[in-house]
Amino acid sequence: MNVYLNGHDHDLQHQEAGGIHFFCLGTGSTVRPIKSRKRSLFATSTPGFAAVSVGPEAIKVKLTSASGEVLHSTSISRSGA
Image (cartoon, rainbow, N blue to C red; front, side, top):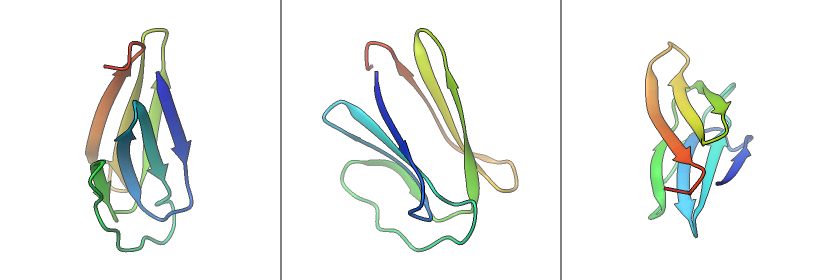
């Protein structure tokens, strides 16, 4: 499983390219408008956070709004499916 986590872009995003899942987790402060890209699986300018759990078979990511609403949830298996 290939996953890249980063912050600072002031939005929440999940993109996939070349078998790598990219998560932008930068809405703990000010948000900014974003443009959805072709490889985007999810993108929003909503304040929030991510909950990430790493297990032997999968990585689970929940992108959650500041009010607690799960906006996007995914599970990436060890096989990459």
